[in-house]
Image 1 (tube, helix red, strand yellow):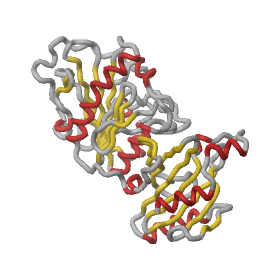
Image 2: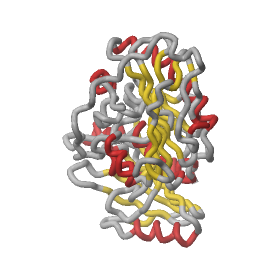
Image 3: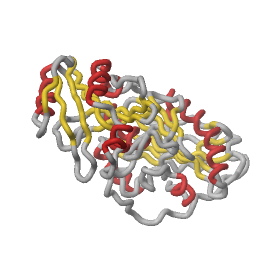
Image 4: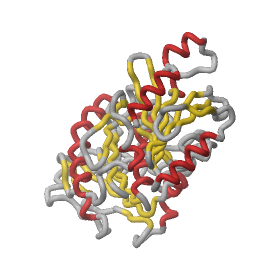
Length: 373
């Protein structure tokens, strides 16, 4: 079920071109990392239009018994394709997991990297008989953190959550987002991605129709999916004051690259022209959290800060050709929390005055850090 050329145009800037393809999702994951290039054969011709009255009998049924309860048969005049066609991949499914590469061109290794174990693909058709349809992928991951990380990758990815093109919050599951012609839902081990397809409609029409069709389906699916709705501990510990809506990225590798810091969550913040990030690393016990802070203290040029939590360190972080960012991290029990510069606001050619306009001073970072603890 690949998206049409129209959906390549609808994909949000900053996400890979294939991200909207199968994911007009209710369970969100996110796209290719820098340097990833979409691969695979050209998409097949679009599916034929449904016949008028296709939903008169209440819609089709999902053949995969495990996932069937998660799909409402009908919603908003659309219904599960009466001709079937749904496919299941992975654990206890008819098709091997490796075949998800036929769904996620160039991205199947990304899903696997986050621990995907099972994917179910289905389609809703228009009961009125138009060529429009809604593609849905439900992915189940090995951990809640892996599923949530993929959701934040889809919603935020390597883009700026402050950008107007970023998907907006919508009710559903533990977290849900509505973009231009697509939607994502996360709950527990699951990520749902939905995409509204209509080759005959202009972008404004796609936006208008999908904003009516997708939110009810997101809510229904988010209610039916099993699992926790509480965010992973690191994400849940992010302060709310100044947090940009849906401005969270969960990182399953090093939160700060090449530091050995381990997994954690970034929150993206804004107040006027000022931008900053808060990073949270949650560990299972105090000793593990101490180890994290000790690791950060070994960064070249780092310096200890006094009277902040259970110990604190300040350092500059630089990754590749990007401008350096200042961070102050402190430990409080099992949490390690940091406040740092927002990389997306910085340019290597900035003057000192321009830099100061969009960043917090060291003192301001420490003040916010103390409040976060």
